[in-house]
Image (tube, rainbow, N blue to C red; front, side, top):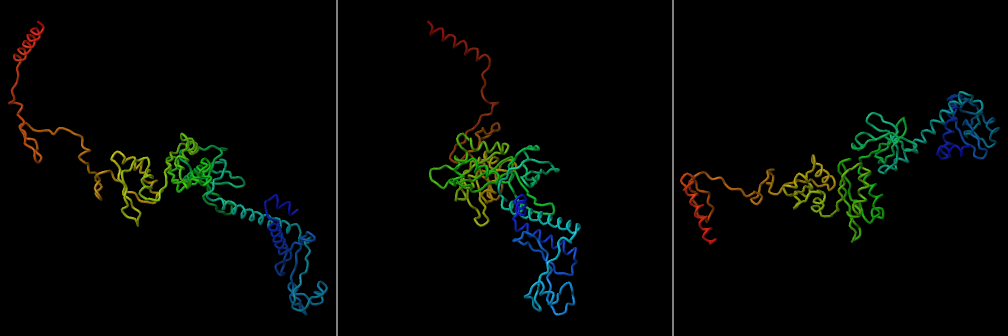
Length: 404
């Protein structure tokens, strides 16, 4: 029977036996009182539980609940001697119905505690792993997810803001942390953790599963953008191409799972400058230099047209690059003054436009140039209507002359 119950409840037989022994002892103490030193033990030979009262052997007992005479002790154990301890079997049938209810309560409590400990140990080992669950109900902004024998909580801050959840829907979540209280085991799960993206990549890319391609880092802002750094352990294998797949087939399936989240796959590099430049993708970086190796600060220069792309919407691109690389990134457009924060425009960036010159003024002269005077428009000669008519007649006469 014990083996059957232990199998049904998923408990170890020894743990169940210990729980019953503890329950019997509690029931016996309630029935017989606290004066006796009572213990419970399971007799594996006969398959029964017994309650014992331990007493000290003396010549003349003073405390009947704790002592026994030598004559009475030798009736139980012929080898008993003065100052030795013997165990006297107590009648368990005399415990009664009320004590039996106490026994049942203790057993149930103990088994529940054991189940809680086992469940806590099981899910503690799964922290950081991806679990499959289904939406069970909504509690305010939080979502309760069924994870088999227990429930998990998907807090609002761990949800993808671009996802719509429905009761009964099957979802993949990451186990963030496990705790236990009077209600049992509590598992906090997430749909926004970077581990979910790493797990999806491993399931979609065979090169990651066989460790040919390694994921060096993953950062996310759930539902909007993510960056993944990958490297190859074998020459000739493009880690970025392996993750993207032919015509983007591999990465597109992951994007669909994450409801359209944009994913930048970049190649990891041991060179910090090269790694930072790649992390700022899709912006094109002209150059990068380390300004403080101890504080991990790097200055990056981009073209003026690439500045907004490098920073990203609300600073998202540079923020993700910082979290991925661990380097604080100062982005400056080409021509930005060091420390000034102002953009300097180079001559070649200025469009060619005529310089307005006042009437009768002399244009500016560069070294080696001769000033050129500009005549006043009022003093310049004018051709009237009469002169224009004469010119027209002259051209007509010339045309007729050549025609002859």
